[in-house]
Length: 133
Image (cartoon, rainbow, N blue to C red; front, side, top):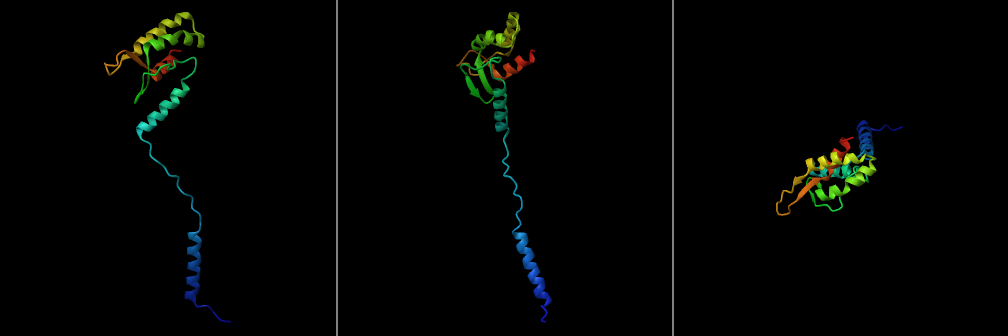
């Protein structure tokens, strides 16, 4: 019987080991794409706006502007929704006075004076409405 030289045996085992390691499926890392703070803020505002919608919240009938910092509605539009919100939340008619104070507190002038008028940040208004409980 003929013996195999040791170096051939080592070469064969090394070749088989390298081939086996090469074909082992390694789990791939998912491609992670960093999210910018602006994208994160926009996603959070979209989720919050979806949560704060319905008849018991202020809704934009006419959105003044979709700016970097959220939806804004006109003060008159917010005032027109007060009776619906009082009814949807089963509040007493006297609850319109605290809601009126809330609207007055959160209203602010438009930054571009040419557009004019007062406006209210819709998300801030709805969060404040929930805090009034």
